[in-house]
Length: 96
Image 1 (cartoon, rainbow, N blue to C red):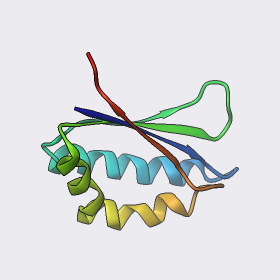
Image 2: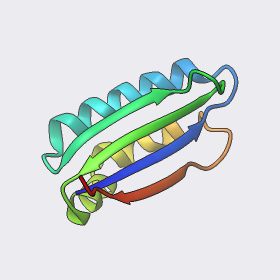
Image 3: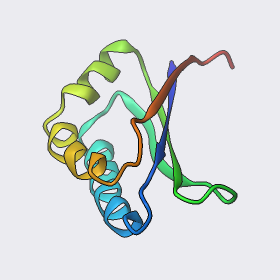
Image 4: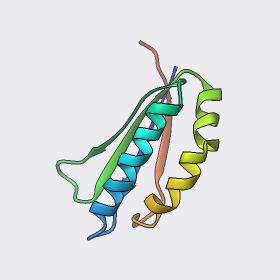
């Protein structure tokens, strides 16, 4: 399995629009990506505007399917418009 985190810094005043797009994307991922075991957005308790997406995939093929999915391509612009900086994406190998 492969875990991925994506740290996203949202512009001031854009959180509501970001959360709306995030909810739509998370619902589409959960409904349409059997190789994705976890896809959830979290919000920092200590850093304003910081969200982290927690993702867990069966394998590289599932990650590729996610990135190439119609819902990801359709909703990414709405999320991106809310960001103050490019996302910081980090992959991890699951060991336990």
